[in-house]
Every structure is written in C-alpha cells, then in structure tokens.
Image (cartoon, rainbow, N blue to C red):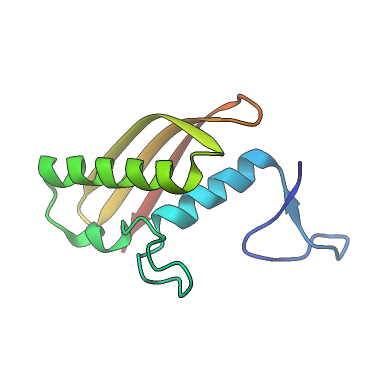
Length: 119
C-alpha cells in the first residue's frame, strides 16, 4: 500500500510523492514523538512531549519517565499499526536519542529506528 509522503511534496514526475508502509509508519512515529501536547488544535492530547526534555537534567529517573511516556503514546496512537518490541531512551548533553524496535502489524516486518534530536 502506498501513502502520501510527509511533508507533502511532488515527485520527479510532478505527481504527489508516495511512500511505502514502512516509511509511512516511521514518519508517524517521528511526528508523534516530537509533537508537543497542545500543538495540534483539534487533538490537544496528541504528542509525545519529548522535545522540551532535551534540556532536562540527564538522570535514570528522566529516562524511565520518558520510556513510559513514549511507550504509552505509541500504544495509544499507533497500536493498530505497530507492535513495540523494545524502547531505549538516552541523553547526552543536548542530544536525545530514542532507539525503537517494532513490528509492522500489516506485514509482520521488524523495524529498528533511531531518532535523535539536538538543539
């Protein structure tokens, strides 16, 4: 199945760019994690709220909180698309790294993504 690419763009043929299931789900995960709650007008509870925590003091408690928050958001918003297998959050200075392993429910394909944000 093909999905519209995000951000919206045109491909080399001048048509709406499309992506496969795996790319589409990866983009959804990234959007969910790095959108702040309250940022979406019609869905104020949507978002992982990870971005402001880049400057929080690095501690085991923060990492545990982030793990639980991210896992809850993934299960709440993307449970029909993915089955989360592993999640690891680490932070160093102003860089936040999220390592996520999941299985695409539609195809059974295992994926591992590493998402980083720094300021």
